[in-house]
Image (cartoon, rainbow over all chains, first blue to last red; front, top):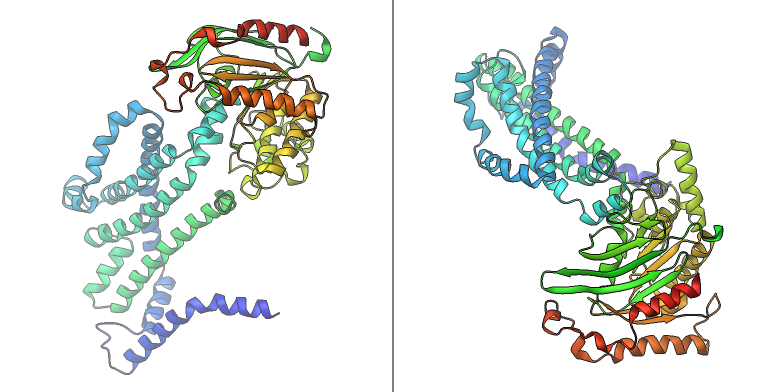
Length: 259
Length: 288
């Protein structure tokens, strides 16, 4: 009994500060101390959320952004995973590709935006391209590192137990690299939303970033704040999903590290 | 061969050599492991005993000389995929992302239920059936080695190689493991080759103790004590003392701890009291 109460209290404790901030925010705006042109009151943000949800606009923009994020992530992540695997597994591939990839890595992908607009205009391709580029490197680097960090003793053991080729990869190398790969996935998800925020703000006709820029022209600060909060929520959701995968696939890891 | 020894693999090594760069690790080594025999290999660090085990396991290739089994001459390294040869390492080398029973089932072919049943049977032989669902990370060092033993046994190996598998365990666990290894060896009748630093361990377990020095067999000692053996017995202590004395009493010039220096102090073959191959043949005949 004592335990359940203290556990519940502990679960609520992290939310104390955010709730306090929200309350102070509401009070400062309501009292007129802070202009609604600088920051709308939280209630107005909630109202904007509700109205946009009812009109269907919100889901439309949310869908457009999510589709871009998912497509870009799949393409960039897929290519990064592929290069991580072959460069981690074969010395020849590493000497052929790694130096080039490391050089490209030093170019901040957001610096390519003017070029991307020239190439693709303001269509979908440009934004997906940027997301894919942003996702590629964290996935590539962590997959590569993960493959390399599989203990050679385990690979030798697998071979001496008759595993080779596919079986060795599926049963020893990939599970051994998985903790690192998932770290890469979490980084990549962060990059996905960051890239999308910038790309949609600069050139788009749909998506959350477009919604925010549109609202700015009409001085709808509550919609702008809503867009920012939506990005935060999407980023958080993606991170939670990645953590869920970690918890599911790396159940052994806690036991292993504790021992 | 008799049906009782069907499981054991006899092995003959002739003039096997191996060197790393300038350093000769195995120098014209000739010996014989009879089917079903338990042989312990002792020697100081760097004497070549682990190299010999890796050659037998097929993990390294033979540079010169011959390796034959009683099934006929081995084409290249002993077959690894057939399940004839299994190795236990100093660390258990369990896959941390597989639970205990799936680790034991590693490399087994067949239907899922069948594989699991075989793995569980092997686990119960080492007394760990009730831990089948656990992660290796939750086991103690001794338990992990027992899982590794089960993983080797499940393939019904004809030759089991033990590369100091008990080196990292505490004294009490070692004694339990000695009993376990002896028991499964007697049940399964495989040929066992144990590499160890521990002379007492070699006399407890082995039919024959080989002492390797500078890549050659310096002593080939039969152990004809009844099993299970008792460390307290005079005969045991005498044998242990003889092997240990030979290990410690060697003139220092023919042995060196530091690598790369062996080539500067070549080992003269006249030092060994009798030809190692003779000793191996005598021992082999005694078992056969």
